[in-house]
Image 1 (cartoon, rainbow, N blue to C red):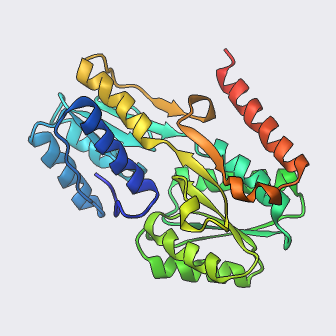
Image 2 (image 1 turned 180 degrees about the horizontal axis):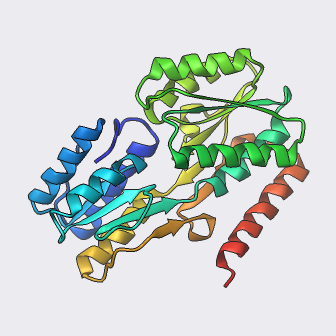
Image 3 (image 1 turned 60 degrees about the vertical axis):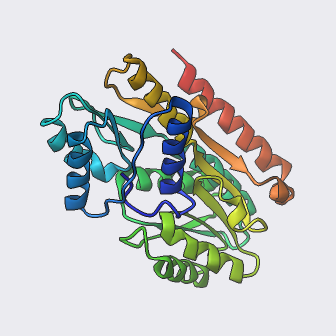
Amino acid sequence: MTPGSIADAAWNSGAFQGLELIQDSLQVQISHVEARTPGEQEEALRAYARQGYALIFGHGFEFQGAAERVSAEFPLAIFIITSGEQLRGNVAPMIFRLGEATYLAGLVAGGVTRSNVIGFVGGIELPPIREAADAWFAGARASNPRVTTRSTYLNTFDDVAAGREAAVALLRAGADILTHNADQAALGLFQAVKEAPSVYVFGANLDQTDLAPERVLGSAVIDLPRAFLAVAREVQSGTFTPHVESFGLASGVVRYEPNPALLHLLSSDIQARVSAARDSIIANDRAP
């Protein structure tokens, strides 16, 4: 279940790619449905469990409570909540430490900005979205203490026009670097960036370079298909036990993907800082 359209070229699109990879790799039956409201989400979870699906993904933090309620009725199903909050019975969270990648993107933003104003557009202010945005701002301030940060939340992941309007407002406020975590609504942000001179943007969740090849400096990527398939293999083999699955840079599931065509905009110092920060984050994650 996704909370929005799989045509968003971001969060929901990546989940559907994961579902298709599971089908192709494991030769199992799959199904997908959009469930946007809390009521729709709980009913969709219950419907899949009732139909006998062994593995059910609620793709987003907002599915946690509904999954806990439904799972009590269906103890044999495995419920995976991406960006989930806690382990509860047969409900297991799959946590992506996207902030590790957005911090690296922030280092780049701080080094490239000329106005020293950067802006973030979020869909709904959920904890994992806010944490990734905060990490982006922290990275920018680490490479450029003069940076001023601005953010806005749309209270929707679907409204492309609202995404464009929010981006335009940030640009008018002086921002020349933007990023987002707004799913389909972010398509409007990319429109605004392409219409404005000397403005750059970062992609989120997927490598979004293709949305604006001459403006996307890089993307904070979550390899959702890789993560989904890993869990599905364990469930199919009978070796899965509910646990908190957390992915950061060291896993390869979370990555910062620079746009090679725009690397010339980065000073050698900024490129070195990004490389050193990445190595340090990975080393700390692997430390005993």
